[in-house]
Amino acid sequence: MPIKVPDTLPAKEVLANENIFVMDESRAYQQDIRPLRIAILNLMPTKETTESQILRLLGNTPLQVEIVLLHPRSHTSKNTSAQHLDMFYKTFDEIKRHRFDGLIITGAPVEQMDFEEVNYWEELKDIFEWSKTHVTSTLHICWASQAGLYYHFGVPKVALPEKCFGVFPHSINVPNIKLLRGFDEIFYVPHSRHTSVNREDIIVHEELDILSESEDSGVYLVATQDGKQIFVTGHSEYDPLSLKWEYERDVHKGMDIALPVNYFPKDDPSRTPPSTWRAHANLLFSNWLNYYVYQETPFDMEEHADYIYHI
Ligand SMILES: CC(=O)SCCNC(=O)CCNC(=O)[C@H](O)C(C)(C)COP(=O)(O)OP(=O)(O)OC[C@H]1O[C@@H](n2cnc3c(N)ncnc32)[C@H](O)[C@@H]1OP(=O)(O)O
Ligand SMILES: N[C@@H](CCO)C(=O)O
Image (cartoon, rainbow, N blue to C red; front, side, top):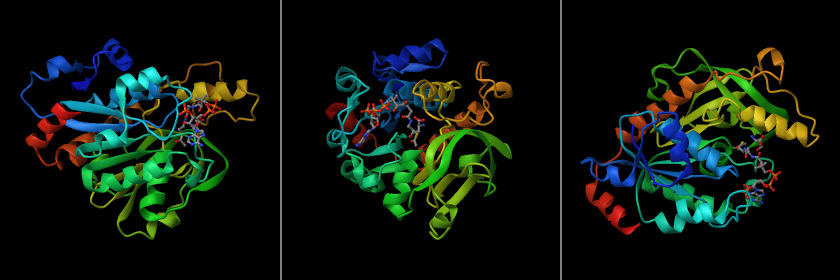
């Protein structure tokens, strides 16, 4: 699919080299269709890496997808340049009067703080609230899934005795759910976190379904019954070498970090880990885009025109 991104966004070249069809703005305007408008609230410090990871997955659909990158105004980024943010990102204040077909909120390395300690928490609460009325479906990844479950349903985040770190087998709880269409009975997902959510705190909410879990890494996929909110506790978007990079970073810092489980061949960190989750990552994102966004979203060309000409 054509993902429509700014012509000079670095991820465009990364994806073009992988033969992923990225459409620049000038060509996209010549197609007489209404693109899906997806906002990505990128809370990761490694923003450029995350852009490529998510755009790669959104690229696997015949639909035209127009991307709006967002960063929290109330946080000054240490690891991403102000120039990159100025060129490619908007803030919530700039877009909040518009509607979006989909919203993706990424993970963030703030899981060991209380939510209220996170300096963009008040802004994120406003975004969560706004998403209920202005977005067809919101996909929350890793820390954002904990934050969203806490904000919307009061589900607490709990500290794990040790980091959940590796690539774990998952199974499907509920048959024939569109989000999991085409999934194998057992599939793999990377996790990399010190905190979790407990299934007991989720099942008390009638409007939430736990769609997939892992015996090793716990709850994975939770959705509201209307599909408007999807919570994903793992990092299906991670590259094959993301966990290796995090592992080596922590070894380098002298931290007491265990090898990621079920990742390096024969648990030998000198060997290159293969991806065992890429196909399901693609399915998850394309099912979400197709069944929860495209097939549910109202077709409103006027609002779209308003958006194009005013943002
Ligand atoms: C549970 C999940 O969602 S996992 C997803 C998170 N995973 C990752 O971030 C993996 C990649 N990140 C990393 O490897 C590391 O964070 C690094 C190497 C980029 C930086 O690490 P450090 O130098 O130790 O920490 P640093 O002081 O730069 O802060 C890291 C990030 O924490 C976040 N942060 C720290 N304190 C706060 C705070 N009070 N409020 C909000 N965010 C905060 C910020 O996002 C910050 O990065 P940014 O300013 O560029 O956005
Ligand atoms: N995935 C993160 C966990 C910290 O939030 C990391 O290892 O950097």
